[in-house]
Image 1 (cartoon, helix red, strand yellow):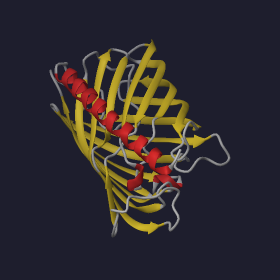
Image 2 (cartoon, helix red, strand yellow):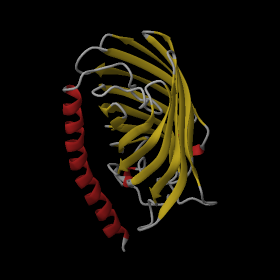
Image 3 (tube, helix red, strand yellow):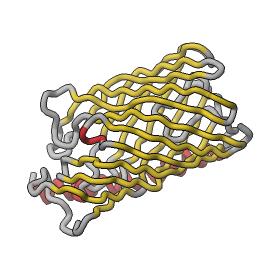
Image 4 (cartoon, helix red, strand yellow):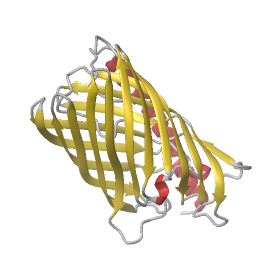
Length: 297
């Protein structure tokens, strides 16, 4: 297949997925708006708590993320990436099932280094020191049928990342990636520890009908210091099962600390992260606001 036909196929598929995603987000937000609310779920959490969630708990949030020295080997670019607005909608479908949609509506990369011979041909419109694109969105469902609202609970997690980005813009692989993982949680009056581990199936960005399997993991510990304040520390990433990964489907990893303040139906959060893989960048700053929808906290 020629490069031109391949690019046309990716772009056509991305446009179809954008339409489907818009519908999915509208449905999720509409359902969340009709649900009673609670303070259990968190915007931009590394792992959503499931075992302690109440049916109908919901929130929708927006935020901004800044990552320094992020690498994009597919497009041969490196620089500081700003994502805004980052949208996150979460809905507890039942007492043990949580559905979420998240992704960046817009991303801007301040280019600091450029490979003269990238793995694919970039859009000739990219000039100067910046490139812009829509971010990829992820749909995910987590469920915990084993255990109770306190103590230990376990279940599974299924996530699908949709290819909304345009790989010729240099900051998105434009691939469909799937994560299938086991999920566990431990909850007490003031502490919650939640984690998942499993397999990520990544589509190879430059090769049709080829994939790269990775070990996917995430862990987060939350300490409820005060009814209105919470602190968390955790990590999330993936590790390739191959010696040499396809370009753009390599390792990712970040450790992150965050703080959240809640009052009534408003939640404000901020976080600091540090990447420990090349593609994850060096440091990240995050901040956002979320609204609890329907009912009281």
